[in-house]
Image 1 (cartoon, one colour):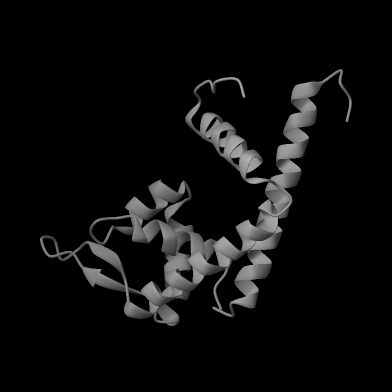
Image 2 (image 1 turned 90 degrees about the vertical axis):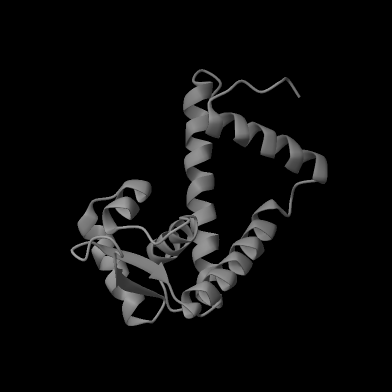
Length: 149
């Protein structure tokens, strides 16, 4: 790392960490043998945050992808019984996506796999370092300035 471009060096470290996080999460997802892809797991997690079954367009917007990508993901999850398409109660032309019992069970396994991956990633850090990292990440995610550590 060079000190002449500290922001560039930090950006590279963040990219490397992101790749490592994805790689470790993918490994833990494969170990859990759920038979779904990381993109499908992201859709399931997103779906679980809606208070009522969303439309495909709502999912696409929340995931920041094109609607066609959501259709492909839903097709795969539906084929494995994780989600189902249901008609909108007020407009029969609208289709909504809801979790099935199998989908909720898969979400519980996903949460376990993610926690396991997080433990692996954070293992080198002390409790104090984890708290500082959490504060720094909150700052970066929220775009606010953190107090000096």
